[in-house]
Length: 156
Length: 165
Image (tube, rainbow over all chains, first blue to last red; front, side):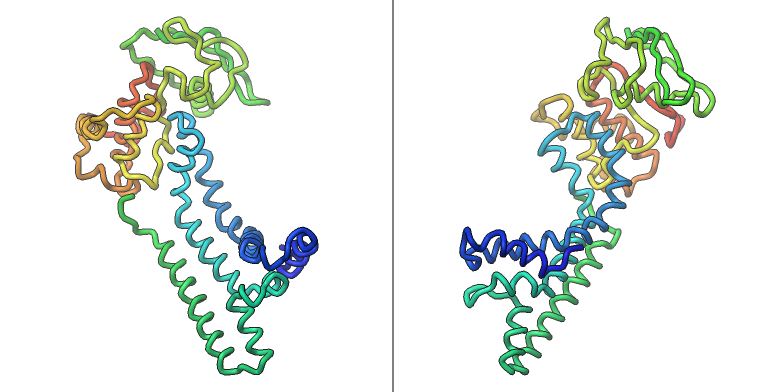
């Protein structure tokens, strides 16, 4: 597991001579958070994949499903796990300061970075409000993930 | 005619199995034997999921062992894993048209008719297959197999989860 700051610094060193970092902020914050969440999401997907893949591969081969069509048919089997993984990744990214600290600018900020700035400017009330919003968002994601993984589902 | 000639298969370290067999169109052949004797492996060889050591398997004189699973003249029903569990029964049956290469205009009607022939009511078709009983799931898989329309049907544990009728 790579610390966010290490990944952010590596990306910064790699790219700052080529492009102004602020121009890449959106993409890099997204990429870094995807990479940072990947180990957790993979752990979530692995057991399901190990159980599903042998039978699904055999069935898809037998039916001649290939390429995008195969992905289109088989991927929804991972729907619950992907949705939970997305919620988990989103919750994790809400705590990220390592990447945005290097690539953020006045035009591009994230909630944790804004919170950090308020704290540094003695903006206690604003910081508390933001912390509350972030807590609410994390709880929302948590309950969304729980709801999405409930077994009873309708027809798809 | 389905013809297996000196087909030899087996897992590494296990004794090899050998079979020659001729089955005329319309005939039913039953392969039986004790557990572990290689019945499933034989079907896997015919399905294209396992490579036999030697021999040939042909349908109407054309060897199909070199073909990928989806181009073989054979449909398979395994003991389990015949359905995509996240799809409805209707969508599972309709996947037959992927293998046939085209989706006919009356695909929906064909799916409903194939299901009805096997005693599956139309109301069941829109349910996820996980909400169906084991026997109903087998019939959904069989309905799809019928629609694929390959001339040879290999069925593992023929009676598993199915009613006598």
